[in-house]
Each structure stands twice: as C-alpha cells, then as structure tokens.
Amino acid sequence: MKSVEKSDFRGSDYQNIHKTMSDIDKIKETLLRFRDERDWKQFHNAKDLAIAINVEAAELLELFLWKDAAEVSVDKISEELADIFSYAFLLAHDQGINIKATILDKIEKNASRYPVDKAKGNAKKYDKL
Image 1: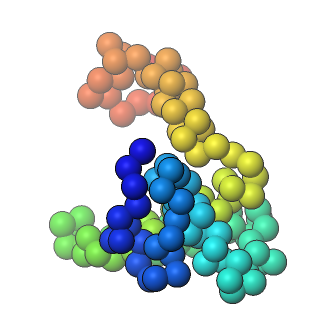
Image 2: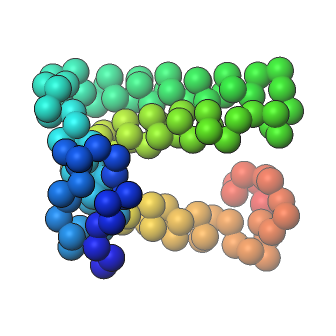
C-alpha cells in the first residue's frame, strides 16, 4: 500500500494517518477523528446519517436544476459528493459494513443481473431484459 502523502489530507491534525492503511481506511479514520473531536457521534445515528445522505443528494440534484449538465461547476459537484460520501462512510462504519467488500459484492450481483450480451447499450432494468 502506498504511504500517506502530506497532500492526502488537509490540515496538520489529519496528516499522521497510519501508513499501512488503505485509502478507504484513511478516509474513515480521518472522518471519525474529525467527528469525535467535535463530539458529533451523538448526532450520527443510522437514521440521521441516512437522512443526511438524502439531503446532500438533493443538494447535488439542485445544482443541475434548470441547467444543462455542462453548466454545473465540477467544484460544486465535488463538494456535494464529498458530503454524500462522508455520511455514507460514517453510516457504513457505524453499521460494521465493509465498504470495499460491499461494493465488490454489488458489482458481482449486478454482473449476473445485467449480462453484457443483454444489457450492453440498454437502460432497461434487469427484470425487463
């Protein structure tokens, strides 16, 4: 695994992450430290984290409202995605969900639901292929 570079995380308090951690683990560790330093865990139950993900997803959608996609600032998209990912990582952590395994399992499941020969270039749901 690559070592942590000074530019991996902003702020000196977050630059001393363990060098052997995966990128996902580094992100989770940084998020947890940020949250815990502010005593915010009390607000981060599963229900409220799920709601926060939805609120941030709505803010992402709002960026596109009444515009062509090309008109939307990539920086603003990035900012909203960071919020969504952050809450999702915290929810996964608190529920004991392995993010990497969960995503890879879902890709495998979708690969069987959407075989290339039926799904390529097709936007139909798997039960309509």
